[in-house]
Length: 637
Image (cartoon, rainbow, N blue to C red; front, side, top):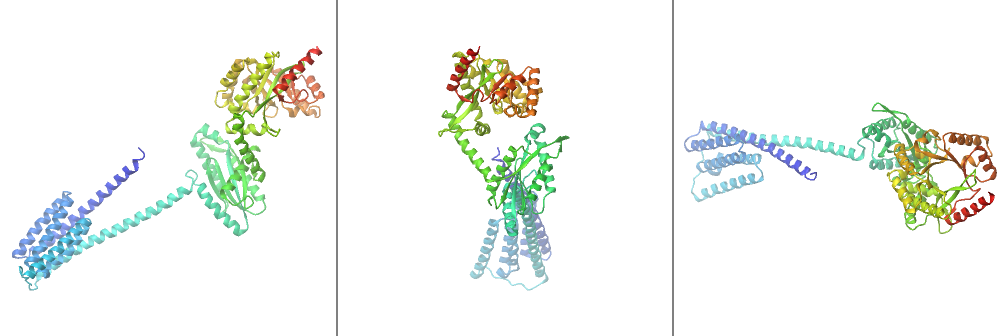
């Protein structure tokens, strides 16, 4: 359908233009017939004998041509007009003075008629007919078939000449008039084409929503600014701006609201633009700001803070107060290079560092960021093959009941051993797995292997042993987590109550309704939920019941300094007390010495975990540790 649209429109336009041209030809034909007929009527007054008859017949054909033109039969009318007039002039020349006859003066007028009324074909036909008639008259004269009669000059001859001049002059006027009108029309069309070209160029170089220069034009503006800065011995900063939390505005209020917000924001930024600054829409919710500066970065800091401040002020969108923020990365020419695309890439890297720093801030590019970015890229290329080749291993760390000294649970911890014996830290490869989408496949594998290991240990005599597995927020996105967990338990033969799923506090804040529904479904199976690293996030005990949490794991940062600062002791005591009030079990992470252990027992903590008992170890080592610990525990009873 779309492919045929343009030709169809073009055909309609062509037909319309043909109709207009045909109408103009009809008017011109009627005007020429009318003026020529009037001229012939005037000559009939003084015409005699054969001349009178020729003029009368010619007038009759002219009236016929006028009638055909009136009935919109333009082509037939044109042929009748030109044919009859050519024949009339030929007859006058034959009966008069031959090639010296006044009628010969009418041939140029006929050629002008042909040019006005028809195309090249008609014009050439009339021209060849006129030439043929002239040759024929000359041949008849040379052969003596006709004898030219040179008339004596009279007033009638003057009238004939005037009629010929008037008709010819009128036709020339019409021709010149049409040419002038055509020229004016062409000038207007040319002006429209030029205006359209300017508009098309503007559209090609500017964003349609904000009317800001787009990425393509931004590169040209960068080149200009860089040349100016080099001439003035200045530096050029490229500030890459990405809006934080812009997607929720579109999701909640609609894309029209998002567009309105962008328009208001760009207007705010325009108001602070300096004459040598350029604001560019890079795409979506990303913008570039080009700003010359001296070696002193104070003015750049002030500019970055101003841009962020303008962004973080509230917007009134569709009768709603909307607040967003911006993360900003800065690269500088020539220090960081002079290629536009490379500087954009480096500013983008710096911008993502600003997001990692907490958002609503800015960060300058440095070479270390590039190294980190390269390392992440290389690591990403290794992740999938590592998963396919079984390079990942599960280590386990025991959790010990502080009241009975029995190992009740083991936490499964993912490790990535390297051929040289080193380990890639999970804090490095887990975020990359999350951002690349591999975390679902990796998390599924962890659930399967941890369930199999725990089921095996239970069969070997540790019948009450449980296993704890950490979850990523990404694993909740597709809504398949319950099926994944159920499958892992069934394949391993592990009862649901032997599995505990650990979640971080921040996970509960994102998309709470979707996560709540899935956690409720898991709890109904008998699986328990633990909140990991409690105290480092929002620390809101109120939402824990909504997510069926049964256990709080107090972050190690509070435990390691428990015997050093009274502040941490008070905080840990408060967490344990509030958890007990809510019927929640508490687990202290990071216990490394006996003094800390005794302090936690005194505070009423339920379970401990840390190097005091064991560091994370492979499954075979943990099996031996379980047996030794069981023997030790039995001996103490």
